[in-house]
Image 1 (tube, rainbow, N blue to C red):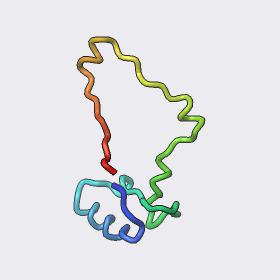
Image 2: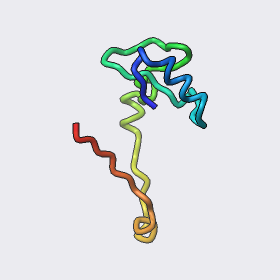
Image 3: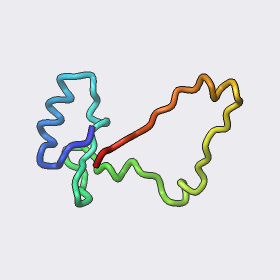
Image 4: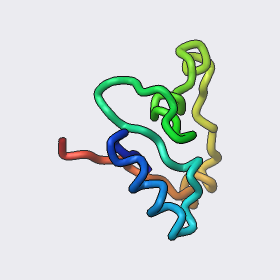
Length: 77
């Protein structure tokens, strides 16, 4: 879950009332943030450019391609 740094305490309390672990919370704002109450900035999820260059899509057989579930992330903004 992405949360603005000003609302991190609310997000932590909300996570405690659900099955969501606080390590699934990330600070989200225009400026990179130092960890706050153990919650990391969302940018900490990103790999390095070198790692990104090494990443390859998994090749699927025709049979696998028919059965593989896919997602399409979409944002109108």
